[in-house]
Image (cartoon, rainbow, N blue to C red; front, side, top):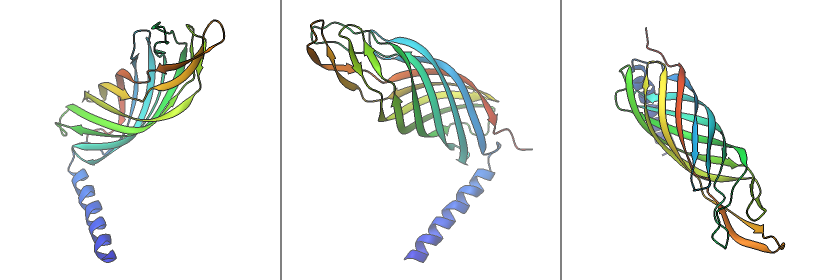
Length: 202
């Protein structure tokens, strides 16, 4: 049984390698992107983001990679128990996701794609001015969906990062604890960038 599994795994690797050689493009590349981050919530303010994502095309239609991203924005702090919206300070957050992109026209210069990813989001601490509340920094497991296109070495994409909310306790003007505050951590990213490597085979 072990020998059969070993042969099956080896055959799969050889098959994927052979298929990757059929692509008109080199399999390894690195995406470098800048963009606009749009956090969720009424009191949120947009910011900037920067991402680096090395990738490898296991088959012409499918690339897998590791997205490393930093986003600077003011996240929505939620509502206090009186229904007042809180205002949050601007801070940076990071994300480390395993990703996959499916290309609809893998051997053309114009290549639309759709993709997704899962991984760890590093959430910055947040301070809410309405109740003087504060949520400490931490990490959340989340996901991402996206779509866009590549044209030669240019890349454009729209992503939605799905991150669980952060719950915290604030304090009112008399110093009494105010529980039930939440910070929305999900955000949308609109990106433009360059594709380094991954050019056409000669």
